[in-house]
Image (tube, rainbow, N blue to C red):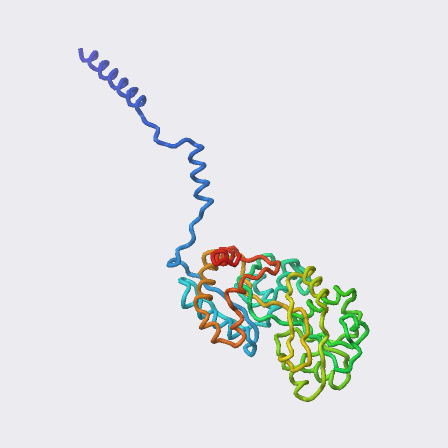
Length: 345
């Protein structure tokens, strides 16, 4: 009897197990749906909440005596006061050419540069010996530096091509304008080596011109340039070498990283305006910085232009309307979003 009871109990346990297995519900989604859900999640990563940021940025400028440094300090202050979770430090540097290297090599994050130097760095062209593909534009609009070709008023030099075979000072070695001079000469069918060139400072170039030691000198700097104004103040008669409009148009079509610039009579008190090309200044930023951070930086800068404009007289050219100029260079995606919302792209 006891044996029969044990058999019955065992049979009941087996039946209950089978029923339980047969009524188990599969609550998992099909594999395809899971994969799609995971893909959607991966495709739309959330930006780090501003409150959780802990970001430190370096902003490279130039020497403390120029305009880059005080403007850079103002931008750093604006970021520190208005962009949550981000601390920015403005630092002195060797200027635009070095700034590109600092950002390209990851030693700095933001900095002042010129369009033609950014283009050269993206291509690994002179004066850079490697490609820096992490460079993007934060904003444009800062006062451009015109290429000013100065000769004595009684000089026989009338055009750019007349510089061939002449004694020409190109400015200091390593200067940002040397790339521009090379581009301009190449456009007109000759090279720097076709001139009897030297690399005097702008001040020494002015002295050499007044002493008849050179035939011309070229300045790539914001106007008015002290080296030129000092010549005029001393009573030395000068004039500039202009570009014909058709030459300027053709040059800019070939080199879109430059802009057209008009040196008006009031700048140096000369008797006519002079058409030339100029090197646009801009702010460069590492492409690796998050889009939302870049968006917030631009929002802070252009919401606080009073602080920016108080830093230096030339900062007043940094208007929102001119901040998204197409110079043939890539803007940071965060900048694209910001300027698109503002109707500038």
